[in-house]
Length: 246
Ligand SMILES: Nc1ncnc2c1ncn2[C@@H]1O[C@H](COP(=O)(O)OP(=O)(O)OP(=O)(O)O)[C@@H](O)[C@H]1O
Image (tube, rainbow, N blue to C red; front, side, top):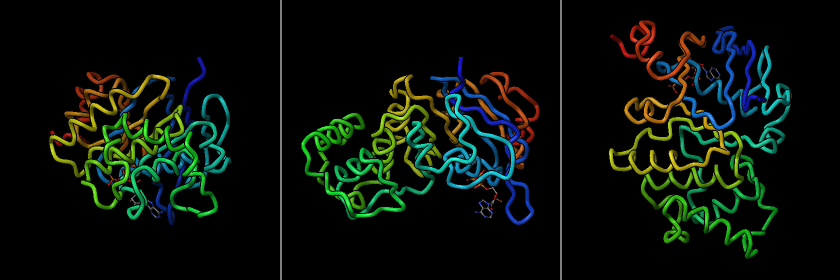
């Protein structure tokens, strides 16, 4: 079976500090993979490398069998990579509906060029509404993204990420900053994502994340030091030492 994601000896340094050190990882299609590790372990950097937002110093990245190591973000998005960010990146002054429309159109939210006005097209509009419905927010379609609760913003962000039916979804701490109730809602939402979408998630909320994870990778100072199923990783003494502080 061709892996959804395969990293081989991936490396990245910033100013001489090795942040990704020889990371190799294989994620199978449909898998739910959790990446854990202390603050500064290099988790988000790894996501940035996979999505193509930063280049890698060495090693390779294959998406669904294709070598994308030197490919641009847009090319990887076309291959089906979508992501969310630790800091929400919605257009705060835009409606929820329009945010999802932009997701459908594949606009890079951080390099937005207002050159397309397809939002009025019925098909896109209806699809965006249907996607908002999957996160329980169709009734708030006309609300401004900046005026809804943080938990709702997270849900919209997942809707935007799902708008292009990604084959690989990277979720960067989707539960961070949410109340207990909001975490349950977002957790259920993630659990309901169909298996056609492979998910790699960074998350500190172990209660929720362990339920989600089929395999777990533990990063420490940019190195992958433990990998395996839930039981193996949680009971590994290195995990306790590094992450659980036990
Ligand atoms: N663009 C950059 N330039 C310089 N240093 C960076 C850059 N991006 C990340 N770093 C450094 O790389 C290290 C790893 O950061 P990263 O954000 O990947 O860690 P993380 O595991 O995601 O942490 P957290 O759990 O706190 O989000 C940190 O020391 C950070 O300061």
